[in-house]
Image 1 (tube, one colour):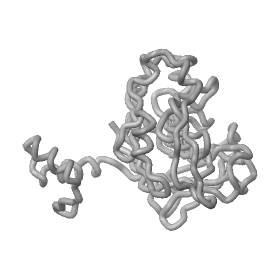
Image 2 (cartoon, one colour; image 1 turned 60 degrees about the vertical axis):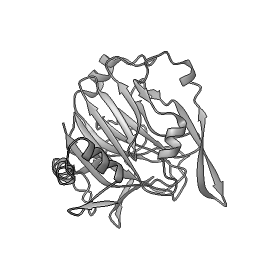
Image 3 (cartoon, helix red, strand yellow; image 1 turned 120 degrees about the vertical axis):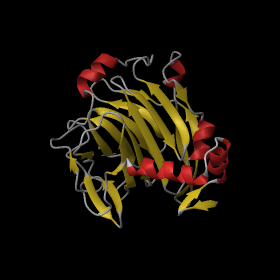
Length: 276
């Protein structure tokens, strides 16, 4: 690692900076300025600035959300009851870049929501960390929902502990026309990016009336969805805009139903947003 003014740069970042005629000091300053323009959504101590869905939605009355050692945790309320829900930011966001660290237990079905309403309608980045799940691709969680999951994964366990993931195809994706995603990673790229048993960092970029949505996991681009021109069967940009509008909450999900294993949690920290 190359160090400059307490900022750690990878060798690749340093080489790119110098190739572009940028000094390491300038590179560090640019990163500092980008961070300075972003805001923490979760202070690591309280749930200030957040609320659960104010009325029952399909997943439940809200779920159980706690702050444990600087980490936001979510599970069903009471555990194993089937009662889930959403934790939503009080502030609404339209165009933004969001970064969030995640460390889910194996078994829960969760996700990061955005442009989300208090009734639970919004776009979702999957964090379905279970057999047949996906992390990093997109779903429209709303009346007449639509899934944009190009592949799924299954877990390989050793004495009950997840040791690796293997990918499988999604039958729905095999029927897609060209143009559903503008870009989509391969299963191999996802497996290389995702760190089993560790914290992983996701980034979501969302801009536009009919949103252009890009996601990354640990710096590897997962997908780019063109909300104006996507050919996804069942997707209607005008209907989606009418439902969601131009802005909505950022949210974390505890999925309702009996498939959430009792005692398992989703975990989040370092939730930071930059408005564009």
